[in-house]
Image (cartoon, rainbow, N blue to C red):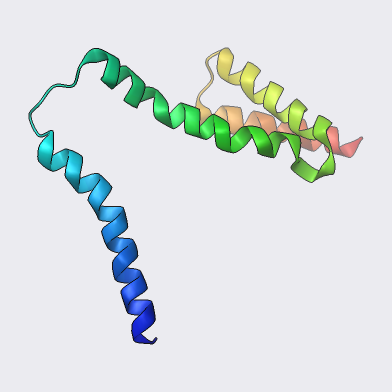
Length: 100
């Protein structure tokens, strides 16, 4: 590997490390306001929805396949099943659907 790759790896390491280190350094021992804490707690769900929703509409060039999978996953998770059962259940429903 040339020196360009080493600089690139170092730059990526710094870019990944800084956003994790700065809050730990400056917010250590401090309590965030409830509104800020609530917003930060919901960010992973918003990002996950933004990443998954476009894929639902473009899966296997068949929108119905993605919609059936999304509806199945929503129903299984809404009734309170564990994440693993939601995934396995959705895969099972889509496997049966793909047979037709």
